Length: 341
Ligand SMILES: [Zn+2]
Image (cartoon, rainbow, N blue to C red; front, side, top):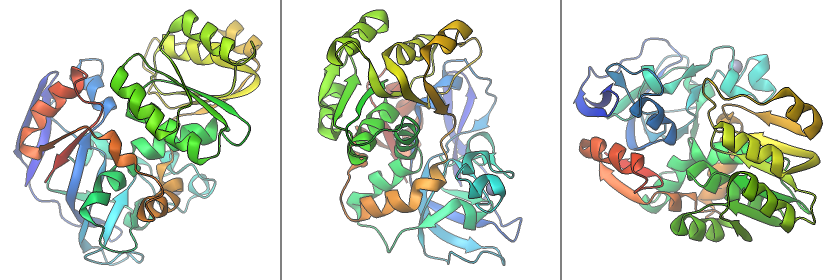
């Protein structure tokens, strides 16, 4: 089968890999229908994370081809959406809603790699969710978004306690930030301020529910948020970048007693000064999103055509052209790109 490999930073190719086989009785083999390139795939691409002939991809939708003897909730032929983290969905951590930190958690990136024709999904019952039937082609981008960016933006909005009567500010206009806007809208937020300097992303943010746009960044961005909120700051702030600047922007934009939901992957060297943390007096919650917790609800919203997160994909290429897709994402020519199989 075909598999996208990142051989080294800025060196992506489509190579051959053995077809996956059932190893454990709880496994399923799926044939991918669509996959995509994530903003987090750009970290190794840019040399910030180690990479060495690594199989890439952790977002996926597809059809079940084979199941192990102990798989109970899925059957061959089911169309499934899975999280970017494998989970058993039964341990105490999963039961509490933190499937991304499951006792048996395994990241789909790096080892499994879903930028490929097929994938072996361990703990299939705990990781995959079947759709109510075979989806129309137009629903596939939205279902694919649920696998990571929508689920992550949704978790960020929940962690930031977005809801009725709340003003929500979103730091980051990548796919996850835009999904955070969509989630805040669905959760009933009164006002949603998207922080973005790019016209195309501002337009999409408005379409997903943003009521205000702030183009300024850093201290100027914080001042603008304060100005829009009677000097108080937002009740709920979504941090969807993961840099020092974005974290400090999120802290500055949150009112005392408010909530920050952080989902931008933080890297070495990003730190929050303890005095800022102490005096900010805010609720902090975040990390790798437990997408599996939200999948049944998100699939239903998409199935009923109540949300259209698939609009975040603004470039589609065949899997063969994955290298071009990485370049487009790196150069910010695409917000989010879909790879067709
Ligand atoms: Zn678990």
